Image (tube, rainbow, N blue to C red):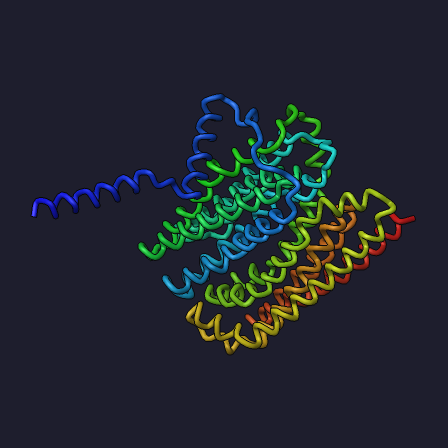
Length: 462
């Protein structure tokens, strides 16, 4: 017996020894390495003096991680809405949807239309310090406007706290965007994708876990903001400073130029966001909050079209800017633009077919609501998504032309028409009117932008 017992001890001791000798996993090594690098940089007193470790000019990784990052970011709203609908019901999920809609609108203030301007600044006319100060200022303004909105609307304490959690999360998103733009500017878009992915995953996990445990949207919204802040401080900010050259000193004059040059960008994008969200804003004062949930749920497939289009063309913006700067490459530029429009039309058709086949039943299961009654309206939403994707792409191209000021008046025209049309259709046909209103306004804006695009291009080509 003693011999058998000794053998058993020997076996377990051997296994324990092997466990100790086993190397940590790749993920553990990566996390430990990053943490050690971060701590060392903090102790040294400067993140910008760290040596770069990740390669640039990696097209395959750029596409993969940018696609993953955009997908994770784009699915936050639908996933959290589904989670809210299943845990706290349609009415409460509608409240959260409305807070998120306002947060998305405020994000345009935070971003100030600078991302495309920044990444196409291939000669670094402005320092990264200038871009950072610009984003800090616009982020503060964004949060102040959000607080003012809650007071003007007279939200109760619950809705105000939900909004604050969403607004802070979106503010961090806006801050992170300028650092991820820096990585893209130096051809490390895949690192920006990694940053965006991890932040989005943490936000989804934090919100979902808290709302499942507490059934409290206020606590879940606050958890979402905390998770976003943690990912920004521990990953996004240091990654951008580690992996890009140290910036020149801050220049008040250059900061003023950024604000001046990007004001048309901001105005146009913010007006576009107002136009796109006008049905939801009018619905808030006219219909019950569960209609917000129905509207956004129907729009999510359309949003997928905008997101997929962005996944394809956004990594090419720097290349397109370079092609346009060379007169001999204008033909290739035109071919890429035409191909992108063909791609948008194709994915719109594919998503429409998917919705017709399995999309409606799947939506009904996910939200716990019968969407069969909204089948026709969902088809209209898909078409709207295709038009919106084309508008977004056209706007980015016009920004590459550095002619963004030319389209501001078009957005203003569309906005002036959008307000009375929205009130008329929604008051007359309620949810159906909101869906049709969205398509009508987007179609009008698309026609205006196409006309302006050809006018600008003809002038620049001569």
